[in-house]
Image 1 (cartoon, helix red, strand yellow):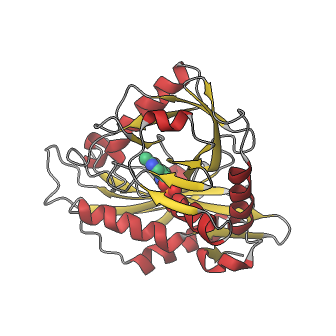
Image 2 (cartoon, protein in one colour):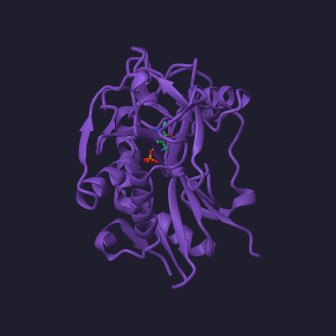
Image 3 (cartoon, rainbow, N blue to C red):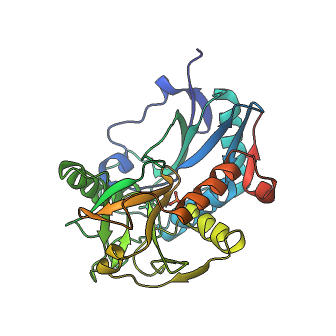
Amino acid sequence: MPQPTAYLNGDFVDLNDAKISIVTHAFNYGTGVFEGIRGNWNEENQQLYIFKLKEHINRILNSAKIMRFEPELSNQQMCEIIIKLVEKNDYKEDIYIRPIIYKSSEIVGLRMHKLEDDFLVYIVPFGDYLDPSKGINCGTSSIRRIDDSMVPVRAKVTGIYVNNSMAKTEAFLNGYDEAIMLNMDGHVSEGTGENIAIIKNNKIISPSVSDNILEGITLETALDIAKKDLSLDIERRTIDRSELYIADEVLMTGTAAHITPVVSIDKMKIGNGKPGPISKKLQEKYFAIIKGQDNDYGEWLTKIF
Ligand code: PMP
């Protein structure tokens, strides 16, 4: 097996040689913005499909803008680097692509201005993150989702993820698969790496974009499928914690998590405690799309081999 390749400092290099200094600003202060993008392997036609590459790069550039970063590369240039890197690594399995724009200056001091930016990318083989077939058990976290007035929540900032990691560990220590984070107002925000939606009376409801969520690409995909293919009504609005318990179905969406049904929250069963019919239909369509088995949404895919 050849050495995996990464992209760092404008070059393709062996992953083992892709190192940064301990003085790097982003390492010390969390001053990076990043993405998680999936490449999905289709064994039958021996193709890897990157899902919504442009959309992810759009989001990283928006994150960069919000953080006052000034990256030199355009969306197209970043996409080209990622496609080349995926080709070079030649994985024939599901992968996770991690681009980061980060403050690369080797400098001590708190600021965003007058620092250099670099763009790096690495790839790792990546199977299931949560269990999309059995569904997951969630607990409401005592750790609130960070507020947009503290660190911009629609920017995917590396430093923010201390908040999410602590909530995930608390959930794990309490025996849950994933945390549900409330926002500072006490309303439902999201999972630690996933958006959340409830299904009630054939309507799919997800927190509004001003409930301190990351504006998820998988959620948007799921809502598109729900509307176009399942003819469900969609609502974006603030959700109370107690609404979760009496929903017909609850699901989480994320690049890593795909569409994952939530079967219990705070030890209370959701519905009959099994993945619900609408979640299953959404999942089925979504998996067909991301694996290139559904021609309806071909424009969302970048074909590699
Ligand atoms: N919320 C948070 C905090 C996340 O990290 C992620 C993963 N990027 C999501 C939601 C889901 O976003 P997406 O579907 O774009 O991966």
